Length: 305
Image (cartoon, rainbow, N blue to C red; front, side, top):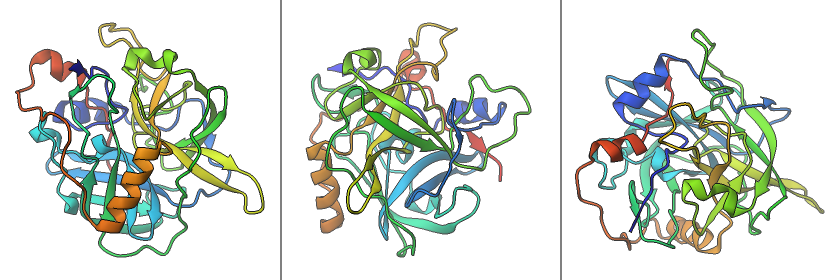
C-alpha cells in the first residue's frame, strides 16, 4: 500500500480552515476575471457548524447532479474512514460568475466514488477523487458536458475557479467573488510524480490553488456545435511536504481525469441507478498519527459571506 502523502487542493479539518481564515482567499493564480459565463459552473459551500463554510468548485452535469472532488464532500471529522458530509450541509450557487449570486440549491444526497480513500491507496490503482452531489430539486441552468476524450501532454486546458490567486495571501486581502480563468498546459505524468499521480489523473502546469478543488479543467470542442467540455477536476498539489518554504501553488497540479473511461462509466451508472456500489478498496481504519495529519493539510478557505 502506498501512502497518499500530498495535500489536497482543498480540504476540511478545523485547523486548516482556521489557518486559512486568517489570510482571506482570492482566486486562480495568474488568472483573470472570467471573460464569459461557463455553463454549469458551480460554487460548492460545505458548512462546518461553529467553524465556517469551506469552499470548493463543481459543475452541474444534469439538472439535479453536481460533479465535484470526493475530498470536498467527505467528512474529515471521521477520517481516515470514508464518510460523506451530511448532504444538508452542502449549498451550491449555480449560473453566475459571482459565487455569491446565481441559483441557490441544497443537496439531498452525496455519492462518493467507492474507491476514494483519505490516506492509503493500493499501488497502481486510481485515487478516484470524484463525487456526485444530488440536489433537492432540478436547477434551470446550463449544463457542463463531461468530455469523452482524455487530454494529452502539451494540450492547452482552461482552468476556472474561485481559489487563491496568490500564496501566501497578504493580510487583509479582499475575499474574491468573481470567477477566474487561466489557460494552462497538460504535462507528462512524470512531472507530477511528487504527488503520487496514478491512473485516471492528469498532470497540469501551475494555475490552480487552494479553493480550486472540484473546479473543472476544460477543453474546447470545436465543430458544428462548439462548446467547452470538462476533462478534469481539481484534486491536489505536488510540492514537497517536508519543505517548509515550498509554495504549494507554484508547481504542477493533479486533476482527476473525468474523461477516463471507468470514471465516465461510474458517473453515468450512478446517476442512472441512483446509488453507487460499495468500496472495492481495503478500508482504512487506523487513527491519524501526526505524520498522517500533516500530509492531510486541510486547505479549504474559511469564507465569510
